[in-house]
Length: 441
Image (cartoon, rainbow, N blue to C red; front, side):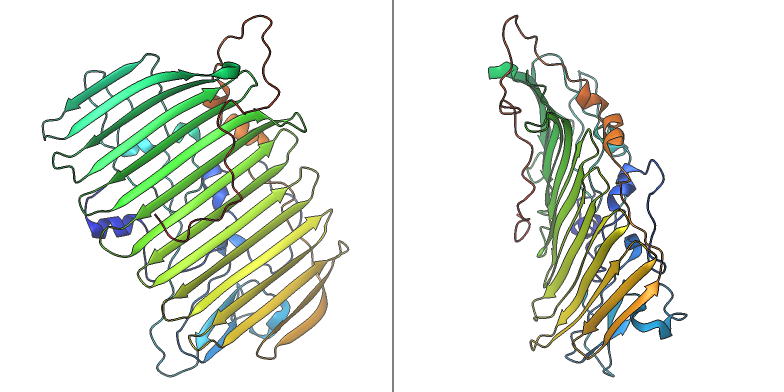
């Protein structure tokens, strides 16, 4: 990482325009799509991956303006499509637009693009001072290049520029066949103003629990700091006896020169019968502006699907705005509903709510209203489309978890049986029910 605050801000994707993006398709970006999509999509409903953009003027007089994917051509269709709303000021000289940006960053396919992962035993580990990137989801294990050593080592050294490094590895053993193999490494500059740390591990026990993980952190001379963790887990569900794989990632970065930072928490859960859950919590701040985003997807493996998104933003002047929506479908029948809202510094609130009922027979009931007196309630002929199965499911995650699946547990002596309290001997799967912190640490 270039050790300049301006470069750090660029690396963290801080911008003064926020497009609160819909999350659908984000996981698919780094995970890839496999089989073709299923179901049918409501005609005229724009792809959620390119959906809602909310702009805000801090003027007290705000006129809600309806925008569709083909805004010019569909200007007369009014409330028939409710997937993209914007706010526009009608004042001649409004205050400057103060939204913020949440652009999507592309996860580099190989961390090794920044540094080599495997160095000769005679040399120290290379500097890993690269902060995480925003909106990159959960990487596959191959992108981390985890390479645990088969022997215990404890090495230190000094480079030609005076910077120091260390590398150590070991193995911890416990009850129920618990074993954790780990490697730690790190380094710091000669003056101590910059520093990095990284740890890899693999865990297993006799219940079949397996875990692969990474944690890294760092800081630079300007005071910029970051932290990131990633892990994937295989275990047997205690109630269904089905194999499950769970993956998660947390990422955080903070500027050392301004009140700016961001935090993200991502998770994915899969079982062998197609049950899938995915979600993310995000938070960001740039000086007087803050934004949040949460989304989730749940597939029961039998055709039922629930998806939702909630995102909002605010400034220290008191302006707030946001957008949320939810959809539920099963066997071609379901509903969609949502709300777009805005609150001025004076406390004046505007909102528009909308909904769709899909009956499974080619008929769709569309309805909505706003605080400015708009309303609609119509039934139209429209095909229904929804994703009954995730783009990335059980077969995909198994294929991308070869290193996790290849972890070998300790040999179990004859007559010794594993504990039935699945996963207790190793670290439990992460608790994803908690909200992100109020601000980056």
